[in-house]
Length: 377
Image (cartoon, rainbow, N blue to C red; front, side, top):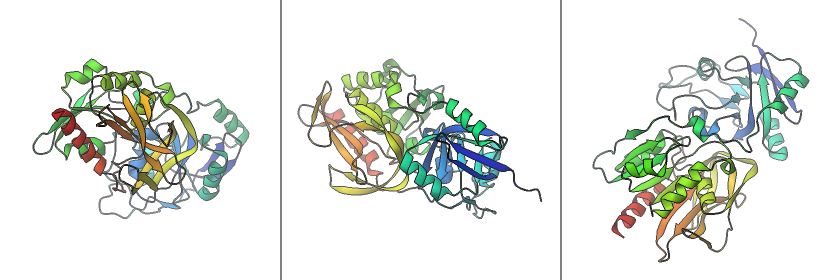
């Protein structure tokens, strides 16, 4: 049996880790982030909002359920690289069609195994998310470090158009059609239109470059902005689109990147978190109900809005509706009209998380209720 290929990981501050190649051989660069999920690695890898990120798995054992043909959240793996401690030697699951490593190799994703991911995660928690390189061809850490520091940073990156569809498609409603929604694909996951479809919504998934005319052409009862990668401050066209939709009193629901763009459309700023929220089991309070949800996250940026009180905007009164109980980061926004009726809302986390948890699935029902109320208004 051939010996495993040596792999090298170098962070932009010079911290170096050695391991073995896991996946494709070659070299890759991106932003080093860590994910706390113990399950759902296939959904993570195929989530477009991880575009240009090198994901470090905090769970030590990864790959035991292999890879199947059913759980992809998009048409491909989007992560720039993958870091694990102890990959499964043999996958064991009745749904598996191949191993995790074979799929990484097939799709050309460079990874590294045998790394002390606990030490790497602690380093990122202390120093913050940063650029990183993984190579199976370079043996000199200093030479790889020089290339890491030449690679693109996440701050200032406009990436949603790179992961969006090039042409519109429709996901029909299951059963009786109740609503039509224009969903702007900024890096949408497959489960998002599926969850809307289950509630009788006909979903028109539109490219990130769509105009307000494109949106209104589908005769929508509401508009939705999906998850996605990149810096919300570098994204302007979609913010303008959302402002135009709010001017036309179109009910709005946004998730993750859609929450950040909603914040910017309302006049709030956004900022980069030290190391972001990624993975599962993060507690968020819905301040409108007082309930605490266990949620899934993937975001490195957040909305800078006041946690207390209301903010007046050109489109109505905005308040923070959800907050992270770990660090008080804004996790949701609401917009109400002069009468106090809800017009639009968003959340920072992922209520559509296919691997779970599913505490926040009620938000899709809240969107349906909003469209019902606005149609009757």
